Amino acid sequence: MSAARMKLPAIVATIVGAGLALLSWSQTWFALELTDAAAQGSGDSIAVPGSIASPALAALGLAGLALVAALAIAGPAIRIVLAVLEVVLGGCVLLAVWITLGDPIGAVSPAVTDATGVSGAVPTAELVASADPTTWPVAAIGGGVLLVAAGVLVLATGTRWPASSRRYRAARLADAEEPVSNATRGRAASDRAIDDWDELSRGDDPTGEAHGGESPAQPSR
Image: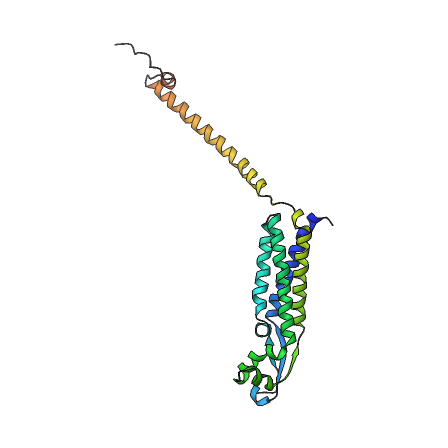
């Protein structure tokens, strides 16, 4: 596939990657079990969403969607800058997920505080019996990988993408305005002809005025 045809796949990959990051942020990341069932009010596990476990994903996902619009209209030089930003953005998504999965007890600590009223890293950690991850962190990892891959693709092919067609739209607008201008000029010429006829009817000579001369003298009565 030629470099010019890689624009659409790169943009689609960016949309999907940012969308996965946002979607996973809104879903359940951990099933939390506390050591004291009475603290939960029941024996059911607590669903900890990504908005608590990894809150940074919301901003990263929105930034990825903003890159889509920028890539669609940017010139070759700006695409390189945006591609670097996209690679960094995808790396930040992967880093956020890695930090969350690397310390699940710390990630679910705000949920423990909401359920029990106990705060502090050590006290909340003592109340956690288990924090089992779901598949949504894996989806976030997939989104980060897609963002990095799309950024690399833009770096490799972005300078050879088709240019914007704005100049063609401007040409079409100019062509569309030309008949209106001709019609306006036609109406102006018609109005001048009517004015000349009225002057002749009154006995005036419009040709003399048009050429800077004087009207012929009217015969005395």
